Image 1 (cartoon, one colour):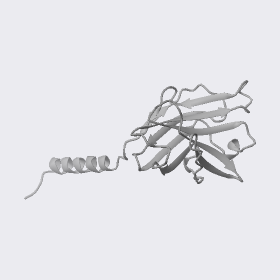
Image 2 (image 1 turned 60 degrees about the vertical axis):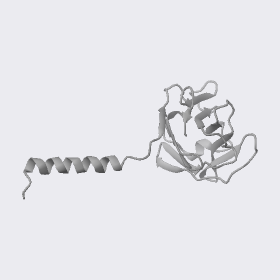
Image 3 (image 1 turned 135 degrees about the horizontal axis):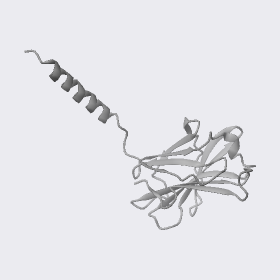
Length: 177
């Protein structure tokens, strides 16, 4: 039995479509930010995904290349993720990017529990974005929903007459799970 050329093409197209659909990563929540900050750390986008008691993946992208030296402790700049468990209005966990001895680290601390977790070395998706992954079965996360927001502050750039602040999403929070 021979299959006509048009049927062969249709089967090939169907197979390619299935492979493309299987290759799609798990859904993630993302947001783009307005272009409202003029500092060196202007947030372009954020992405968050994870499941309760699973592994969370948080990506933050900036308008310009993100250099480690911008986030030295001596600089008046910061880039961080804030996490709200249960969306009660207070941040239960804060993760801050910090450059120490030429290495970029992500430091997590509980705001009420005062827990300090081991530093995480973020991965670079590219020159303008950072990805951190960590377990979400932390003492600070007890509710069935987790919300997150990314914030930057730049009090040193000449383009900022007063400290430039940026936030993504611009209003509200990313729903992680």
